[in-house]
Amino acid sequence: MVSLVASHPGVRAIMVRHQQILGRRGGVVMEGRDIGSVVFPLATSKVFLHATLKARVDRRFKQNQQRGHQVSREDLTTDLAHRDQQDSERATSPLAISPDAHVIDSSEMTLDQQNDACALACLVNPALDLELDTDLAISVPRIPFKYRFPFAYFNCMARFFGLQEVGSVGKSVPGGCIIASNHVSLWDPPLVGSTFRRYKVNTLAKESLFKIPVLGPFLYYIDGIPIKRKSFDKNAFAEASKTLIEGNNLLIFPEGTRRAIGHPGPVRNGLGILVQATRAPMVPLFLRGTHGLMPLGSNRSPLEVSYGPVIRWHGLEALLDQFDKKIVSRKIAALCLAIFNEMQDRSFERHPETDFEKKLGAKLLKKVAAREKKVFK
Image (cartoon, rainbow, N blue to C red; front, side, top):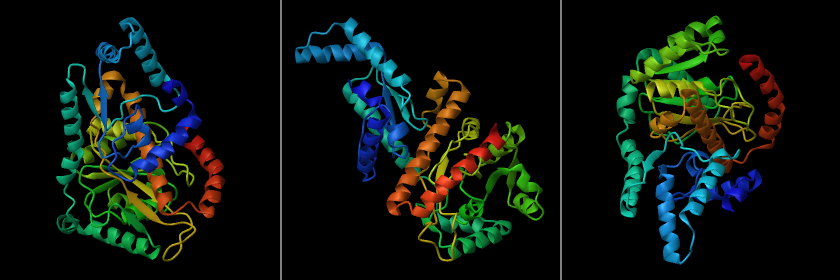
């Protein structure tokens, strides 16, 4: 009856909250069919362990024999196939490969071999993290003069408004990454830029900004890439892909437009298009408090930029074997949105959501819906 009970959104919402509270303490191993894609989108390591239906029926049949239960192979096959269908097709948190999960087919493995394969998969991300070039002593001196002035200016602005950095202090983002940030106000790009410590960072920004006197030439000067938002901009994505392949970083706001406070997403398919074209890892950012800016900071709207871990697309090839590119882009977008929500929840744990944020977020919902309809419909 587990799948039936788990299909109720209210039950799942309560359980997910409890699971996340446990998981944020660290040192947790948790098993479940949507743990990596929904419950712990920022898990250090994810494993999607699967086997053929026949292999699972054989294992369950042997288990039942050892326990003295008499269940036919035919009944087991029907039961497991039905549960797979329920879990894969349910509307809330369906069974899915997370794009950043290690996919392991255990059909022909012994139990010890499965354990070894999973343990090895759990070592991959920490090992890759140790190889990252995040040394400020190396990266900062390499920043060209034309970047140093904007970075210094943005940094002074950030300190004036009391910006707090979470997860990035003393580090530089490794090269060749997609830096994906949520978007709530026009202050977001310069405040995010104030935390950059590496050259070169291109930024995808709406085309109309490049037509504004002074601002337009400045955006080109700091390697901005104009993009048309109402349709797929082939030239913009080609240029963005090129800069990532060359080992440079790319800042994008994958929601496509500004969102209401406390309500991230939806994330657009452009992120998935870039990931599939370049296989570039993603560094997620969560920005909070750029409404209600005040000198030295504001208690009603805490200003912070939170950096998540590097997201690597271990499960991408397995997804592309099953689905077309558009569906895979949606799955990448869904993971990014889950990450934004998790980072928001962590931010609210550090500094509870204020009345100002709640009221302004509710007020902005209608304005955001109207703007989204104008831009994307």
